Image (cartoon, rainbow, N blue to C red):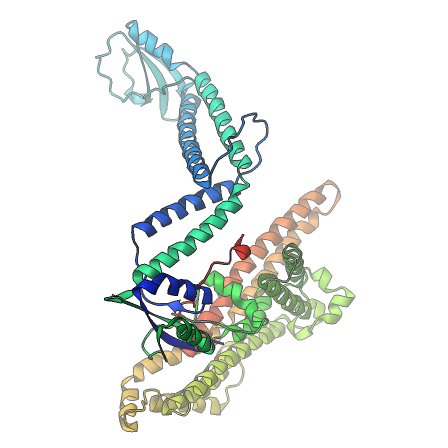
Length: 606
């Protein structure tokens, strides 16, 4: 759920500014909304944070480099270490630039042959001028002295020999590299040695990464403190600032204000002002948080927290999209590895446990195990299969069109249920206002459109009353959608009639939303077809020396299919929750997270 918030105004004396902010930071309750301001001190802190963080990243990524006998100096401070590591990192960048330049020189000799540019210069100094050019066959002059170095389809690479450098030639000369091939290789070797020594230096200093990380966290806390302090509003010797706290924390902030003699005002946020969103859910529902973190989405303070419903429907969408119990077993193994590595069930591991479980269940019901019809026909797996949902109808003894129709039918049921829940949630939110009955109109329309979809897509008979339901729903929307508390029913009706065309377009959109749930069937069927195809490709190879090739085909094929299935989960599974369902709810996901001004927990981050 979304925690109710209170708006807080705190006034303090200027001389108490630092002490008050430290007390407030220790409390860790208030999301400060007063704009933060920079200063010369914050600019220096920020630059130092960037430097330390850069060095921390370098040291964390440092791999062991053996074979270097270079001694590494002991640094007296993190600042000294930071300066030296940045200097060495810049040197590595310059060395890599030089390697790229040497590579370009090497490519020249691959095209023109091996010779020393210094010899060419020596000949030039003695009066024999050598130049190189790539020319077309029809551009060669008959009186030109040249040696063909390499012939190509329409061109040839030539070395021109001249006694007179001023003689005009009908083509451009090719510039020579500064070094010969032998010198290039020698310099490359020296550069590689220098880079190895620097990497060895990084590796031996890698233990400082944790100290740098801790220092960055401390400086980040200091930076935030200074920015908040600089941003306080002022009037003479009085400073004040504004923020938000969870409603159930008001006694703590009130007690702190009384104890430290702050002036305190607490009231409810106004309907139009932005309020941070704090989520508070049960442990099971919090499993969905890794998905929200990846998406970077936060519901607005006045919107719905759909975490629980998102998780429930996501746990239905994922198995239908992936469609394979064998893949579910692999995901389950991945969750076990994450669990063991962390020493506990993290939210990500818990989410994978849940999704792998529902994937195995759906795959077992459809008889899909690594897309293999042979495995599906085995006794225990065939016993678990529901014939009407079978991915391999021949194994279940049913017609293909029956199983496909049943899965599509199930998709439309899921879509209608999810969109209907959205209508009921909107009705509950707006009741007893007259506008709440427009959501009943949408609910009635969705039910009618559901039967229309079944008729158009699956060929089901269309009940007469379903057409009437669409019409009744449309009328209810026109009647109540624009009703407001401060206006008469007639004015609301006129506004509803004025939005007739928009309502008509929204009705078409709702119809397409129901149909869009068929993507669960389509993507799942495609996944099974791809895995089955790779199985067919590998099957003839399972004999003698070709067995490794067969295993390679299976590994690559199923690996690609798993990757595509996971991408489909994000493209389709999340879309149904974030667009179709959230759109029916009217959510815009315009919120921002509650981030209280508080101490950094160094122990948890190091």
